[in-house]
Amino acid sequence: MKHVEVNFDGLVGPTHNYAGLSFGNVASLSNAKATSSPKSAAKQGLAKMKALHDMGMVQGVLAPQERPDIATLRRLGFSGSDGEVLIRAASQAPQIFQAVCSASSMWTANAATVSPGADTADGKVHFTPANLTNKFHRSLEPQTSGRILQAMFNNGRYFEHHTHLPDNEHFGDEGAANHTRLCSNYGHAGVEIFTFGRYAFDSSKPAPQKYPARQTFEASQAIARLHGLSDENTVFIQQNPAVIDQGVFHNDVIAVGNQNVLFYHQQAFLDTEQKFAEIQRKFGDEPVHFIEVSTNEVSVEDAVQTYLFNTQLLTMQDGHMAIIAPTECQENPRVAAYLAELVTRNTPIRQVHYFDVKQSMRNGGGPACLRLRVALNDTELAAVNPAVLMNDELFARLNQWVDKHYRDELSVADLSDPQLLTESRTALDELTQILKLGSVYPFQL
Ligand SMILES: N=C(N)NCCC[C@H](NC(=O)CCC(=O)O)C(=O)O
Image 1 (cartoon, rainbow, N blue to C red):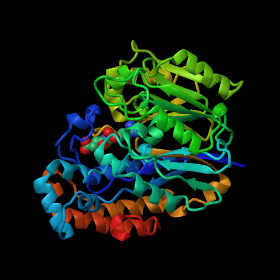
Image 2: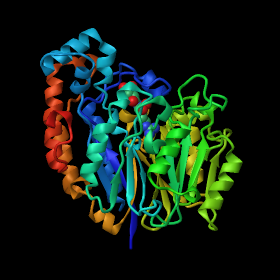
Image 3: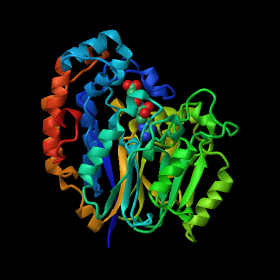
Image 4: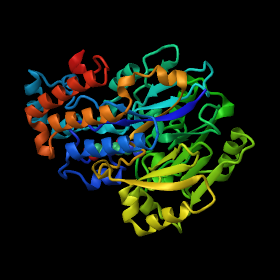
């Protein structure tokens, strides 16, 4: 049986904007209030999806969420017609209003944690949407993420969907951004590495001082239990609190893994030596390539600015790996030199491909943030809703859809235009038909 890793990229939503909502995320704060381009953001994302499809990867699309989120504004006491709710919230509570307009669901690495059937006790692929409790604007995502995932992986024989963890900082869960899986082959049981920022129930343990640690140890453990993972195929490792305080708000900003490669920065983790020995022991006899980037080669600051580690590490059809990097890496001479040299070394990584995802990068989302990885066998892949899988026709159709519904420019002031709500709902209603998702948005239920 054949096994593949499918990347499901978030389609950028029509309200993509820069509101400076993510304390601890350097790009989000430094670009606050800049004018965005929802149309070029969506097209940059689609171009990356199509390019990966053309490289022979199986590529999927994950739909954006309904924003402005009128249902949440009603829960917060704003009343009247939808238009009145919007106008009242925008004038009385502008910060809350900006949060409910965020297109942050585009970063689907935070949509859920996924464990492939090869790792789980019942042999099914398990999904748990991330609760994203640390940021108000992101905490609005899990219910709809769950409904969209159910509509994409809609077969109880192969797919198991869990409810997101309790909505509390003790169980703060950021999904696959803090989870990576090493395996000798996508179909073999692998080692699932859960990276957390702090212990919620033990304040004596190390924790960052300046910026929040979004993922807790307790949340990571709960996901492993829910997914039926065994001790032999899980490793829990703490992120170095000092790098969180330098802007590494998710572990995928400082490390990325694929098959037998873990590509990481020297300062990424705590107890690195001991934990890597555990990873190797659980991985088995074949050696894991631990590719460490030292601080001398690339500083943490350069890594955060360029997203060197928020790259996708993909196995190409010839068995070698390619790095999918943002153009910011190419523009930084130190990082570009590092990558040019890396591909000449004796490691599985042989190619680098650069992509312009600047619209997303300005909010702290690189190529790896934009995708949710799901390893599937042939039978499971055949059970995935085929309308969400990228091909030439879907690429053309989604580009037309973006051209029809998206604005070229959007400023924070434009968010309170009631017309934007109508545009967004019209676009999403049509999208659910293109992707054959059924009714997944609050305005459709
Ligand atoms: N690393 C991964 N996997 N994802 C990146 C998420 C970026 C997102 N930015 C934002 O939500 C900024 C929104 C704004 O400021 O408008 C966040 O901080 O959660």
